[in-house]
Image 1 (cartoon, helix red, strand yellow):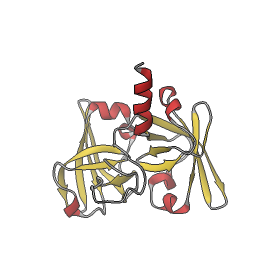
Image 2 (tube, one colour):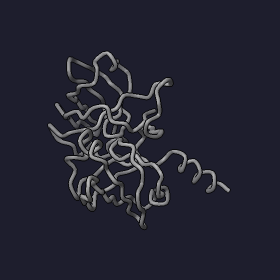
Image 3 (tube, one colour):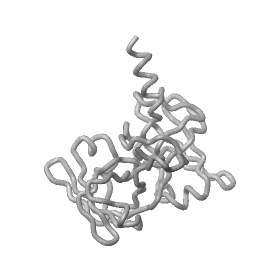
Length: 196
């Protein structure tokens, strides 16, 4: 479980795709002691398991299912990725509950600066659109964001300067694909109402 508060922006050091799965090595400033073999790390909001580590970098394996559901298949060497270590029970919940189980990929359709804020508009897959609500929470590439406005299959988020500086959003452009995880509470409500 994660919070959507990004702790580091890492860089892709090595990326190997083999027989439908992948092995990804990332350069990171996360404390080495906090990254144990077998532990979880959210990479662009995707919960992955650490299988090897060295000073200043660590390696995770990426399954075929993860490649199908996320934007990880399209990353390249030196790309910036958002990183977060798992939530500890004694931690404050600064963002919202993020599972690291990506629901789908959204596309950036607009980026507009208004005063100090940068407004991003995202187009979401049709099945996820009903689960995105104004003033609700979403995780975009693992970043906990508050939904500003919603239309049929689009939503906007107002990004403060701090978030822009400390995440990979500063390098995102129109047309880029981002991982989207909708609020887990909304998913449970939809499931409960749909079962009647």
